[in-house]
Structure formats: structure tokens, C-alpha cells
Length: 80
Image (cartoon, rainbow, N blue to C red):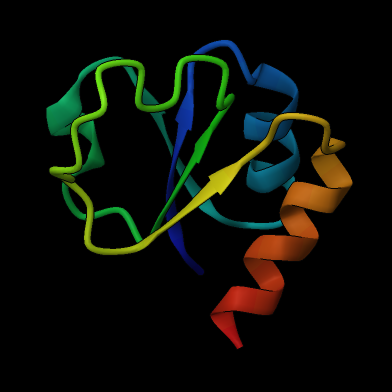
């Protein structure tokens, strides 16, 4: 399964992804994204400073307005 970094505040999404068998890493700092296939963020503070450099090669999923099941579905769709 995929290695997925998830923001700390999204504990329900972390648990849902673990239940699906994914390796979930809690994102506390930028270095936590290393080796992740995906990152799930709240999107509440996205690009506040207008910077465009990234620390992840994989996809970023913004969870704002999505349920845990919807985030899991997006991950599954992107894996295929």
C-alpha cells in the first residue's frame, strides 16, 4: 500500500487510511514528507506566503470539505 503523510489535525483521516492498510505518517515538519507517495493537508493555510517550492514528489490531497471516506477514495483512485 501507499505511504501517506497526513497533517496532525486530521486524525479521523489518519485512522481511515490505516484501516485501509496504508502506512500513515503524521506530518509535523517538512522532513516528514520524505518517502511519502501522497500528503493529505487541511488546506487552511495553503500557500500563505505565495511560495512555490515543494518537498514532496507525490500528490497532495487537500481535505478541506471532504470526509475521511472521500479522501480514501481519492487515494485509491490515484494509486490505480
